[in-house]
Image (cartoon, rainbow, N blue to C red; front, side, top):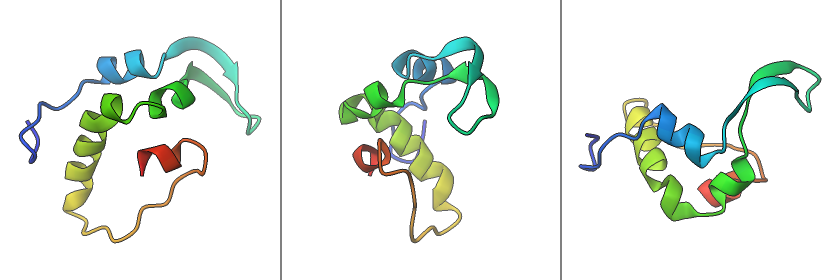
Length: 79
């Protein structure tokens, strides 16, 4: 449970929502990675990601965060 009384979401649940795929991927940066997440689909439905946003909020609360920066695409939906 987190501070908001919700059950903490699992990594497996996140990977399912983000359509996580394992393999070998060349990322836009030119780096290579073993996990691909479809964040566009994930961020399109705010109700689906609410438990993850609540867990992130709880994790950051101890740091007295005043501002959070993120990517324009996808990040705007999260905000």
